[in-house]
Image 1 (tube, rainbow, N blue to C red):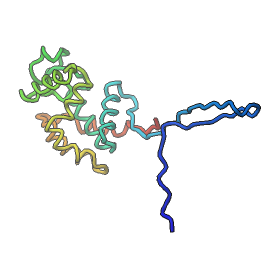
Image 2: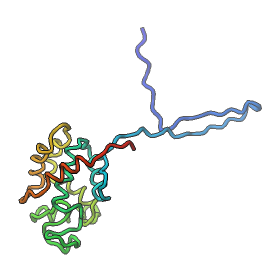
Image 3: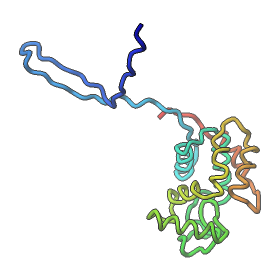
Image 4: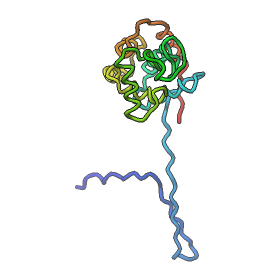
Length: 192
């Protein structure tokens, strides 16, 4: 009795052999890339570039639940309106000219604010840029404590908002929950 056949090795392209039937000594081999499989993603209809870049970042990070993503988005909107170079109070300035209460989630405490600057310096990023701030955000200990909960699908926005409190530690709740519900409604699934 024979076992199952060995697994087929996947290759990133298919090989098509073309033979010249007149002169069998000529052979051409052409490599054809296989089409990439379609992936379902959420995008935010009517959102700006920073909002959609943030949404894509967190999906690439492994968060797929609409409510979890909407909760993250609602919190960032409440804190900064997705403006990475915003200082507490609303002025737009560089990281070095702010002092505290800066960026996407308004890093206010000294260790979090200076942590952003140290992270940017260490990884040669700009502390005033969206990309650097998203990377820093997901490396902070506050995020690390809740990330696994945010990756579990099927919870309500209110439940995810409870996790988000220990991440952001907001002093004023504001409209963050309303924003989250709005984002959940505006997100649509597309194949890319």
